[in-house]
Length: 286
Length: 349
Image (cartoon, rainbow over all chains, first blue to last red):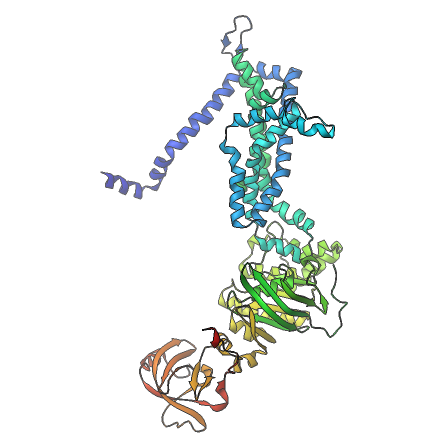
């Protein structure tokens, strides 16, 4: 029986492929695309103001409300701005680390650095954010360190959110850039110097253009992870992210349709972002 | 870019003075002294790990010697970074910039030195013309064959008119036919541009065909420097005798003697071999290689000689039937070269 099945599959490679992929594809379609579709459908429903019941009428009222309410626009703007700031910060921090790992360090040091970069991912997200909360609070270590210089820490707010996100997602930027830089042969860098390129020239004309797709690949992670988060803003800031509004509408206000509508906003932003990333060649770098 | 023209006119193009380079505990280059003349086609020949590429990289400036000095055109450049040296390199893997077109690759050096755009264009297309790739400016480097990439790399280096061009096994990745064709082209180009070429290879035939002079490297040292014919016919020691050409060494009267395989004749009756040194032996091995046949002859007086014979009349069948036959071999006395004693490394063993 097993032998006949093996023989059949060997003669029919398509059937083999189908069998192999049916599980993952089913999971992807039902769990991911299916729930996205349900989310989008739900965003077209509405809440009966009087009874608090969900009315299954289709319309764009939720999106209209989001667009016309200034506070929602502010929240979208803040979320995107902080996600962008985090991405830029991580790119600037990650590049030298990744360059050192890929081109300077000995294999031993390189292995240690990979572990060091990955290590923060082994501990709980909540533990890390709470640690930052403790460090940033009024009597925390940040203020204690800055005090002798007559300075004061950022406290809780947008700056703290930016700081904590930049810390949290840095490994997701380091690793793609490291992989991208490692693919550039050393001889290409030598060639640039050989042809008269000073180190800065070599960086600008050779390393950066060749590593750019990898930076964009890393930015997909830092940007989308920040865009979808709602716990960090809650813990180190009093301002809201898109996720906080969604959370509040699902739980407290019980306005599921509005929550669904707001949840499609980051999805739409990411689609635009990914289209731009694809044009910059980021997917060849993943 | 600092041009190395302040040195005296008769100074060698490249000079290494007691250069030594270590990687950890491993001595890659061990007190090498070398002077390469202007407009010379100079080859550094040796097996892999013999230090030849390290020497080249030190001339280019990619590696710094631990001891000794490097001079270009008479001025000391030991502490000068690669981007300030008047040399250009053709890399073994070509090292073309993958995000640039062929034209942009060739123009890179001039762009950095801020050569005006029109002149850049003109010189780049001239350089591509020189390597027979005229009109390829807008191609992507990924669309080119190995031989074409190699020529782009050559054009990119030559277009800057460096005082010295360094070539690191540039033909290593090409197939035999293309290799031989490129060897001829490289020689022709070197004659046209009048630039000192320093060429690294492990291929002795390549070294013998192309060079004005060559240095044989072994274990981080130079064993011999000389013109190809000189090195081939008068090897300084056993290593050179074995590495350049076929190791054909027999011991006679307490001296180690080398005779090149093409100088040995198999004497057919009634040839008595008058005026030749004649010995008897037995053909132990025959291999037929199209143009020539190689014999290994076991000599009665001890030792073995390889003999190469052109296949003037011989077919492969005839050749293979020779195995085991007893023969007399002969060579002219002046072709048996006694290897100088001092250079052997007997005391090591």
